[in-house]
Image (cartoon, rainbow, N blue to C red; front, side):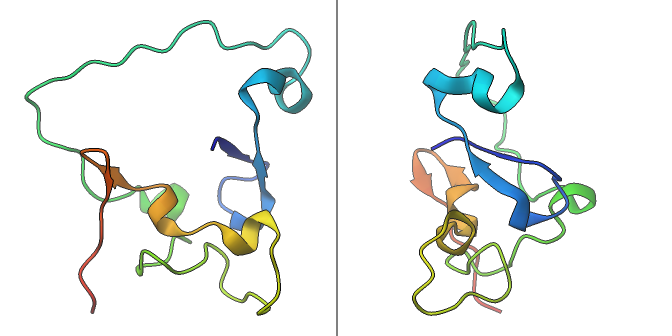
Length: 97
């Protein structure tokens, strides 16, 4: 799943982006040209940039927005922190506080 935020400091502005339809979200003529992955021996980057993702909950299974109605199945209600943080192909769990 790919997502973008209309306002990155506000999790409620999240939108799903389909790779085949980038122009619908980013404008006519936008397309994905290439993706380059490199396996290195460098340490995994830990943490998050509080200036941008300060709203991200500490608990990995918490929704990205603070209050979710029990039957709400919209994108903002179903996205969890664990969708954004992965490690070695598996979800990275934060220790409970």
